Length: 139
Image (tube, rainbow, N blue to C red; front, side):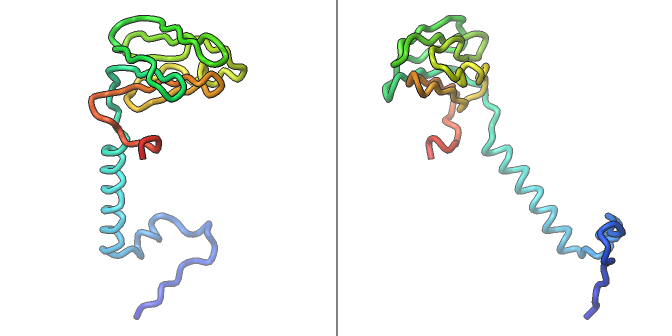
């Protein structure tokens, strides 16, 4: 059995020295891990473009609109009127009566599965695509 003597100082530990002590099995585990991470990233985090927006008021669906048409939707929530802009395949909160304005600062939503929520006004919008993407909201 061979004893490996690594330098005690981290400053003298370099990439060539580490690579020298890695065996074939170590490299195979590293390669398999990288392939798994790459595959899972592409399978679970899709960049599918959205085709429609679904607006919810409270716990009910208020309306669904195609993202292909330019329009402004006025929704009367618990605090007042919110304006949702739809343009060129994206949607956003343009105005909201809430004080924090987090929903407005969320900006344009473009990919399927993205959500913007105005909790004080109880209005939310979700972009929908061809297939339902996995996220923690539908878990």
